Length: 314
Length: 227
Image (cartoon, rainbow over all chains, first blue to last red; front, side):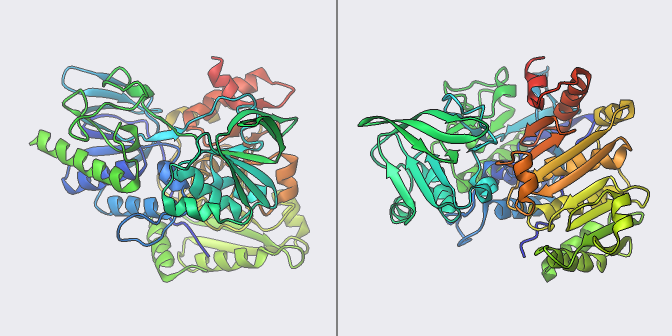
């Protein structure tokens, strides 16, 4: 039986000065934590209430070098355990604000405040909403952004998956093991997902794909009962029980908007991979504008950011 | 059930226990496919620390005690210091639920108060009962913070009762509370929250919600967005 032995962290009401705050709890933050602990940097990791970030929600990971197959939850748990074994310090708290002081950054979390010499922003990204009518109303009532969490509620049901990237196709494959019928709608005429995943989905027996199709509206009374789609043949109504959205990600940069330059899409603008518009602030992982957003690139960013902080502190 | 590695990890975790933790496990023979696994897991846990005092009860034959503890379904696990039965887990503690159970054991028998000052203040000011039900699934990595927060609040305050419920094992209850996504927290049967809220968000929303005292089902987030 699969038993997860990692403990849930706790918050703090601390207020203190330190050399580094790492904001985030996904692979980029965990790698930064590991390297910072090994560099003996006085640090704290402000881990959000979504431990492991988006990576933890991935059912199967098959492209992390050195590990043939592992769940997202397990790989981030191992990363955290490894960082803790080197002395990384975690606090369960979300960053509320981050403001520049003369030679430090004041970072306010839920009930703690830190004055840090350096900051690594590794807050990742949350699933983007499509913004269609019914999406908010039926969140938790048939609309989901996490197949790993919610698939069992849709056993033998008919579901829709929206999206065409790696996440959409991977999670559709996971869902197909539970549902009776899965329809994936994608606004383009081909997948952006890895060819291997795309082929797997196209050969899935209870799956079908509607190309060049977008979601117009989600309908229902107490829970999802159907959708209206825009198809190349015009509007089409489908009766179904659930909708899983994978239409991109929204970078979690709100608390840092006045601190560093952001791109139009909300990501942190970086140069030399992890450097931001401020010398003592770094960004790593999905929160950046780096093009490839994978666990392998996130941990690389985290390590680079911690190394850059170490250099600055010398 | 626990691998050698798991057992080693848990032993290490239980090293933080400085006082005894009482655990009651309610199971039943019939119509409970997961009771046996729950019993085995708790028996194995029992052997990993002298601080754990686990007792096994039968929901059918130990009815009086079950009623006193407020347990009406199985498998059920109650974690406490022996003075109350406010912190309950329903369902097999597998996957991420195991993590929530372990954390609650350490919170109960550990030396540090895991709640932040704002939450402690909220609970000290509380003069109404809060019944919190948190629906979870074993594969949900974002469920433990919600489950543990409710358990911590119930451990601290005699006004709070928490039930962490494995949604798949109790489908009638999941249907009753319209659970189609997890974590889903229901408070007093009237307030609900989807996803894990931070301690600050939860207590701020509850403070406003209790003052508002709505008659219809209300999303706790509404209290944060409208203020």
